[in-house]
Image 1 (cartoon, rainbow, N blue to C red):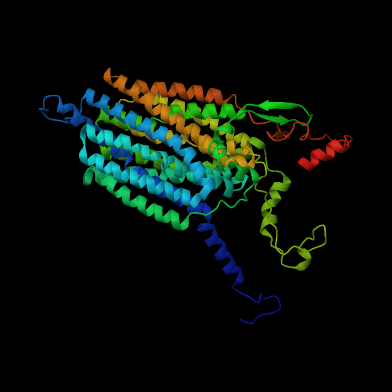
Image 2: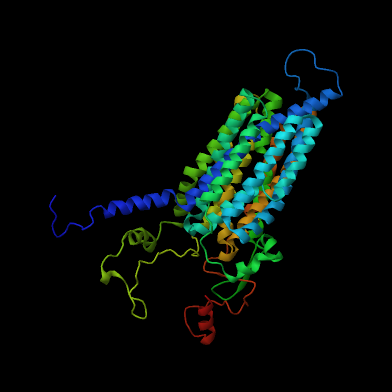
Length: 552
C-alpha cells in the first residue's frame, strides 16, 4: 500500500511496542511472585490432608499395641480414644510448627536484608523440601516412633518454613507495587496461595487413596525441588527500591528484632500544631491476633469434625479442603480487588478531577520536542517521567480497615452456625461459605504498610505475619486440646461456638482501631516534635515555618 505524509515510517512499531508491553506485564515481577506463591502453596497443600489421616493411622497403631485386636466390621480406628489422641498429636504438630514459624519470621526477615528476595526464597523452599524427606521416613516407620520423628523434625522450620516464603513474597510485593494497588495485590497473592493450596488438597487426598499414604509426601518432595529451581531462576533479585540509611543500619542484631519495634503507638502532629498519640497499630494487631486465633483452627477443625462425626476419609476431606481453598483463592484473586476498589470509591466518595485525569495523562507519550517540559535550569527531559510517587499516601486505607472489621463479623456468624451441623453436606456448606469472610489478612497488611514509614514496610509485613503466626501457634494448641476434650464427652461441635466467641472479641477490638487524623504528620522517633510542625495558612511564623516545609 502506498504511503503518504501521515503514514508512520515504522508501520509495525506500535504493534511491537504493545506486544512488548503485554509480555512485560505477563512475565513481570508481580506475576512471577504470584506463580511462586501458587507453586509453593500447591506443594505444601499436597501433604496437609494426608497428615491428618497419617496421624490417625499411627495413633490407631499405638492404641491397638496395648489393647485387644479389633473384631467386627467397620473402621477399626473409629474410636473416641483414638480420635482424642489424634487431636492431641496434631495439636503438638501444629503448636511446634507455628512456634518454629514465629522464629522463622525473624530468621527469614534477616535473610531478606542480607540476600534479597531470590536467595531468601530459595533457602526456604530447599529446607522445606528437606523437612518433607524426614516426614517420608516418619510415615514409613509409623507408630509412636513415627509420630516423634514427624514432630521433632518440624524444628527444621526455624530456618526454612512456609511462613518464611510467604514473608519473602509479601515483602517483595510491598516494595514493587504502588500504594493504591498494594492491598489488592496482597489479596491476589493470598488468592494465588489459596488456589495452590486447594489443588494441593485435592491431589494429596486422591494420591493417598489411589496409591498409598506415603505417595503424597514423595510427590511433594520432588515438587519442592522444582520450586527451588524456579526461585533460583525467576525470582526478582532485588525489590527495586534504593537502600536507605535506616535499612543499612538494620542489618545487625537490631535489624533482626526490628519487626517488634513496628507495632507501637506513634505520635502525629495535627494542622493545629497539637501532638497526639495514635494507638491504631496496637488495636489493629490485637484484632488480627484474635481473628486468626478464632479462625486459624477452622480448616483442621472441619476435617477432624467431619472425620469423627460423618466418617470422612482422605478423599472427602480432600474435596472439602479443595472447595474451601479454591473458593477462597478465586474470591481473593478476582472479587477482592474489585471490592477494595469499589469500596474505596463508596467510602471516600467519587475520585477527584485530578485522579480522574491521571489515566489519560499516563496514556499520552510525548513525541515532539515542544511537548517535553523543561525543568528549572532549562534542560529538556530525555524521557517522560513516571507519574506516581511510590511513597504517596494511600487514600483508601479507611475502607481497608472497615473491610477487616466486617470480615470478622461474617466469619463469626458462619462459624457459629457450623456448630449446628448434623449432616455431611452441612460441613461442605460451611467450608464453601467461610472463604467469603476471608480478605481480612491482606486488607490488614495494606493498612499496616500505610500506617508505617516507607523504610519500615518490610518490618511491618514481618510484624503482621508475626502476629498471625503467634495466633496460629496458640490456636493450634488451645483449640486442639478443646476439641480433644469435647470429643471425649461426645460434643465436638461445641468447639465451633468457642471459635465464634473469639471472633466476636476480635472485631470488637478492631472497632477501637482508628487511622491517624487527616492532614496529620507522623513524628518519627529520630525527629523532634518541633521540627515537624506543619504551618497553618498564614506564613507568619518566619523561619520556623520554612524549616518545617524543608523537613516535609
